[in-house]
Image 1 (tube, rainbow, N blue to C red):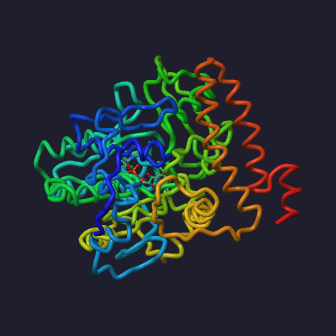
Image 2: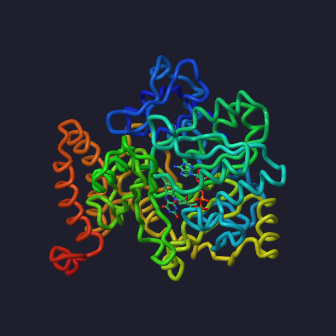
Image 3: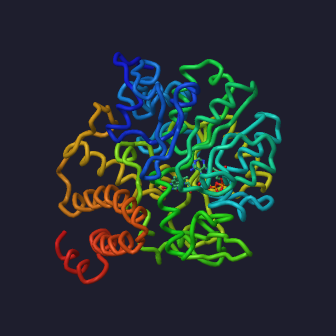
Length: 452
Ligand SMILES: Cc1cc2nc3c(=O)[nH]c(=O)nc-3n(C[C@H](O)[C@H](O)[C@H](O)COP(=O)(O)OP(=O)(O)OC[C@H]3O[C@@H](n4cnc5c(N)ncnc54)[C@H](O)[C@@H]3O)c2cc1C
C-alpha cells in the first residue's frame, strides 16, 4: 500500500469537515485522545494528541489523503476474487435473501444476515467475540460493545442511525488476545483495515469484517428530533428503535419507536416526521459528502436492505449481500442448501440497483461536489470532478448539502432556546421544497417537472 509523505493531525481532519468520528485514532492513542460528542451531536477526537501531526495518523484515518484507498485495500485482501465491479468492488458472490432459521429475521432490521453470520462464526469456534453496536445504558443511546456470546450478540441486532465509535473496541482487542469479527459501516471497516496494517496485533486478532451498506451517518440529533416529534424527551427513553419491524407493512415504511417509563411506547412513521426523508440529508455527517464506498468494498461480507420490488414491499425484511471471503461463500452456500438461509443469486447490476440513490449521490453527486467545492484536504477520490449534469440534479445535490449543514445549526439553536418549533418549522418548509425537487411532488413539483 502507498505510504503517505505528509504527517497529519486529527484536528486538521476535523477542521476540513472530513472527520466521520470513527474513533480509530483514539483507539491507538488511548492516553492522549478521547471521542466526545460535539455541539452538533457528532463524535470528534479530543485531547492533547488532537493537534499533533503524525504519519501514523495520516496512514490510518479513513478520510486522510495519505491513507490507502478501498481499491488498494481490497486488492491486497481479495487478490483472487472472481467478481469485479466498479460499484460493489471485488467479490465472490452476490445474493438477495434472508435468514430462514430461528428468529434472526424477525429480530433484525432487514433479513438478519449480519447477526446470523457473526453468530454462526462464533458457534463454529471461528471467532471468540464480535465488535458491534448495542443499546448503551449510559449517556449515549448506542455504542460499540464487544460481545463474547451469541445471546449478547443477538441482543444487539438492528440498525442504529446514531454516532458510534471504535476506540473502546480497538483498545479491548489490543488488551485481550483472541479472534474478533467487527461489524460496521464501510468507512469504519476501512479504518479497521488501515489500523490492521499499522498494528500486527490487530492484523492477527481481527479475523473477520462485516460491513453494512451505507447511505450516510447521522448525528445524535436525529434521534432527539424524532423524540420531540413523538412528544417525548430522549432523556426519559428506556429504549429507542429507529426501525420497528411491522411485518404487514412495506419494509421501506420506516417506523420509529420510543419506550418510555410505565410501558408507554410511542411510534411514528418517518414519513410523518418533519425531517424523516433519509435522502434529504438532515443531520448528515459532512465527511460522508466525500465518501465513494457505498458497498463496504474492504469487508469480507457486506449486507444491506434489498430496496427493490418485490422485496421492499415485504415488511418481514430482505437483505442484499456481497460475499468476498471465499470461506464465507462456502458457509452461505451450505446454509442455503440446508434451508437455514433463503438466498437467491443476484447480478451485480441488481445489487447496485437496490442502492441506486446512494450510488447517484456518491458517484455523480460526488463528482459535482469535487468540481464545485473541493474538500479542504487534497483527497484522491475514485471519481473524477465534473459539472456537466442536468440543472435539476445539480440543485438536488446542492439542496442536500444545504439541508445537512443548516439542520445541524438550526437544531443547535432550537435546542439551546428550548424552542423545538423553530427547527421543526424550517425542517417542514425545506423538506417540501426538497420533495418537489427530488420527486416532483406538490404544485412546485409539477412546475419543476416541466423543466428537466
Ligand atoms: C448509518 C447506517 C446507514 C445505512 N445505510 C444503508 C443504506 O443506505 N442502504 C442499505 O441497504 N443499508 C443501509 N444500512 C444497513 C441496514 O440498515 C442494515 O443494518 C443491514 O441491512 C443489515 O441488516 P440485518 O438485518 O442483516 O442486520 P441485523 O441482524 O439487524 O444486525 C445489524 C448489526 O449491525 C450492528 N449495527 C447497528 N448499527 C450499527 C452502526 N451504526 N455501526 C456499526 N454497526 C451497527 C448491530 O449491532 C448488529 O450487529 C445502514 C446502516 C447504518 C447503521
